[in-house]
Length: 410
Image 1 (spheres, one colour):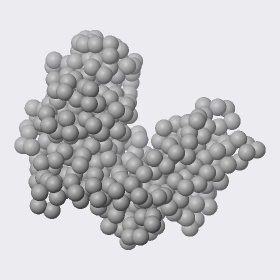
Image 2 (cartoon, rainbow, N blue to C red):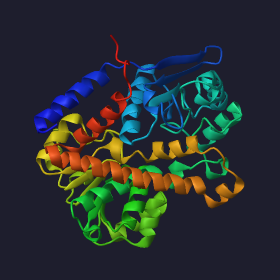
Image 3 (cartoon, one colour):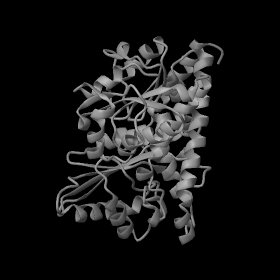
Image 4 (spheres, rainbow, N blue to C red):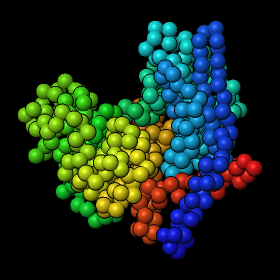
């Protein structure tokens, strides 16, 4: 490729080929007597052919009432892109359970779902890499799944005591988002000690971003979250006490400290998206930035923590306005990287648990991998004068399709 036109011709060709792919496994599992309905969709596995988990795909397990096979299919397709963009030799998949996890009989429903899915798991000869955390998940699900399977090999995100990385509690996905921001800023010659940042959504992801990016030198100057009453701005560095409350998801303490340290700018939590700041982390809902409000963004950089916080038609507008934006599938891959560490770590003894060996491995691989991937897409973006999202999409689709010979229909 020599020109921007060449780049987009190749990207269009890759996208058409990817759009023509069909999942390798698409199945519904049911026990009508118990009212159990669940789904597994494996999008691709050839990318894993020469890795430590041949013919394997991985993604989380979504649980909610009304869940459909179509939703799981869409999520599996997205995981194929995220795993490939992360540079992992791992296909994309998703599993899900159509159930209310708050119902009193949910444990029996969940355990039966795990039993029905067992024959498709990679450790039992299938191509499904196993279960994990997603919407509706809770810590006890790992216990139930591993007990039902009589194995810890097919559930990721487990506690350290169970031989896992505990990536949710450790905020490893948020670490990756913070590292993506650091790499982007360094490559644009920014002084990290002078960078201000804002966070939309102070849940698990937003809290971890505050934790890790603050440690890199950034100064928090605004947050937006409905549980805190809207958008707060900080004219001075926040105290260690407030920082600890936000990072620790201690909502009560944070609410007590906010009035003395910040100003409630607006009761609308989305207002934080449009505040003056160097760096914006959207860490809450999907499609909060769109073509209708893109011109209101004042941040010079956006690094996406949430899944799909930006509508597709907004990316070129933000790029036109000079905003450097790292897409979600590049920045928030820490969870799947940690899952990969769990899946590929064979022997975990008590000393490893005491030393938190897998946690350290997962954090180190997340940091190095995401920094490398961001550097690659920044260079592509500069070379062809394109949004980083397009550069990331090209990288991911190339990795998938270079391995998927003969997978397209027809």
